[in-house]
Amino acid sequence: MKIDNVAAARPQTGLDAADVVYAEQVEGGLSRLMAVFASTFPKAVGPVRSARESDLELLRQFDEPTLAFSGAQHKLLPLIDKAPLHPQLPGKVPDAWYRGNDKAAPHNLYLRPQRLVGDAPGDAALSTGFRFGSAPAGGTPETSRTVKFPSARFTFTWSAERKRWTVAMDGTPTVTTEGTSVAPATVVIQYVKVRSSTYHDVLGKNTPYTESVGSGTATVLRDGRAYDADWNRSEASRGTDFTTPDGAPMNFARGQVWVVFAKA
Image (cartoon, rainbow, N blue to C red; front, side, top):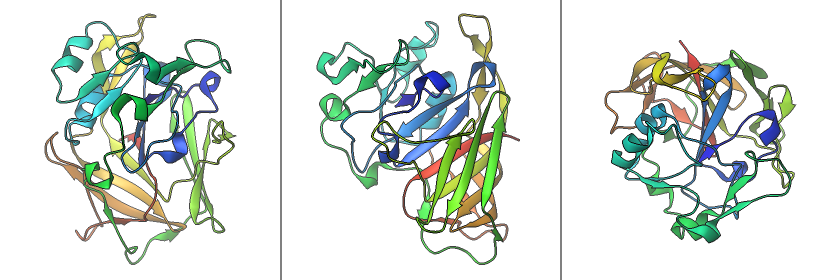
């Protein structure tokens, strides 16, 4: 699900229940989230916003996923229809979507995922390439790490008590509408190529394209430590493999994973 992430959209709903949250750059250097749900569905998720071209490449790693989004640039819609996924826009299943009263439009569109697709598919649907297990040797003690986009920033702070990384976006702690602090077990800062796409928003600002296929470096935060890593995704239909500098698999801590696509 594409999740709105400007100040007017916060606090979000259901974000703490996602298995994976991808943070990507959009027009004007702002950020938007792609939240992936497989193991469980919350009662509601949102605010839901529009898709981008690079989402199609990112989602190819999953087996015909359902993509819930509020719309897209009209020239992009045919590509979404041809992609190996199930696009879901408001209106197809009317009782699955609703407008909340807590925020102004367009930041108030929410989805009841179970009404849209039924039961959650389970962990086996997460064909991300991620491996979970014991931490590798080494690493550097880390208490906080900030990733900056041109007009957005993410700060992850280690909580030894919770054994999780608390999230702050643009300087504000990320707490859901239910009052739950969003705190992943693993944070991946993945350095990728971010280039201009052929699309623009209604104001004429170019839409960035985040290349998630290829290879590069990453920083993995887990267990209060930072680890250098390499990433490789040889083709769009494969997940992303993360390895330590010596080539061993890079294990993640079990729990929610955040992947922040930072410009290399």
